[in-house]
Image 1 (spheres, helix red, strand yellow):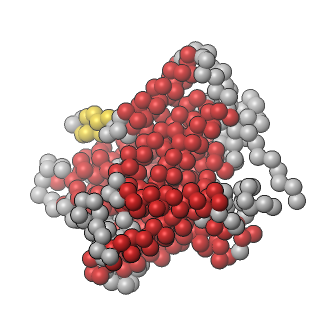
Image 2 (spheres, rainbow, N blue to C red; image 1 turned 45 degrees about the vertical axis):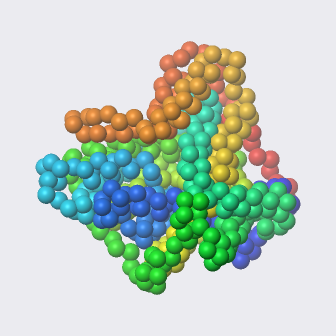
Image 3 (spheres, rainbow, N blue to C red; image 1 turned 120 degrees about the vertical axis):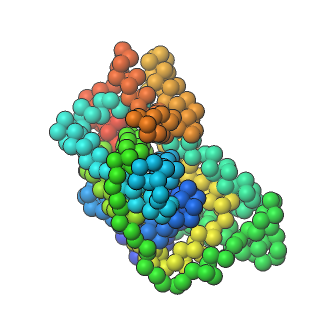
Length: 461
């Protein structure tokens, strides 16, 4: 088999050393966003928020549990969810009832308790899908809905890529250039680890620039090893048990409506990327159970909600290595790092500009997958209904950059832009006349991700 042009579905053909390196690449892809969530939550809770160590072990264990629930078939990594940030902020600012005299650190477990309930709501949707059947559910998610949603997933992340890269465009361009060069002209193993090469080479450049006294354009140091020096070499993650209160549950649990829609979009994106119908096999109900229980487990011990990561979907598209075992290696690395505070801080010292440069490629790849999905599904945009659905999804997903906040019984709830886009697209597709797609009517069209992708040709032995 020619590894240069054909996807690799069994990484064992590459050998153990190369598999270990590929796992490392996936770990680097998820690391920046995963640890950013506890960093932001710590700001809300005045330094008494989520732990990076707990976040890492929850991401690793949650990913392994997700793979177990999905029959070890889906190459997805579960990292920290940004959708619940608004909920954390709301709980941190609660000043009534039992929260009146609480410190920030005492409020946090109640926020986690609300996330536990949010994760369990996934099981309800999974049960509905199991009882009603995937075909009845997926008829509400034709290509004209899921394609634009996938596009939104990538484009909604674009501002963060630009923001990070703008802290030092030189470093960002080094990272991006290295990725492009090795992805296009690289040979053998170098071609399938462009992300890892981009990170390591640009980090090496950052070390050299820092040693020469060069700073970022705003005058800040390119690298800061203060936290590295203060961290211990080995240490247990500071777990803490969640607590439950109706007010916190009403703040956090409804956010599951948003994250469940995002989950469906992510499963569609991953299926489209690797050319396999994961929505039907192992089944959307299984992936929902895995994601939901991983989220509940994480929150039980003081971690954030988990969600499938688009960053790692981008790595799949670039590397063309679709073996889930590689993702599980990344999960093991995350677990190991959770017990190594100093090493975690070394990786955390990765400049934001490098993360931005890498994200330029990863986030763009996700949107490109959505465009490819629309094209290969032959979505007919000469029909007004299709134009309307796609237009509303794109504007909603990108326009509601801060989400939509409303109050229910005095409790503030925020729906993310992606959730609004998904809900609007599903609703319009259900009510507008003139449907031109039925799930299950054409097995070949439904061969990938359950919404019409060309089936993969069987590899000749």
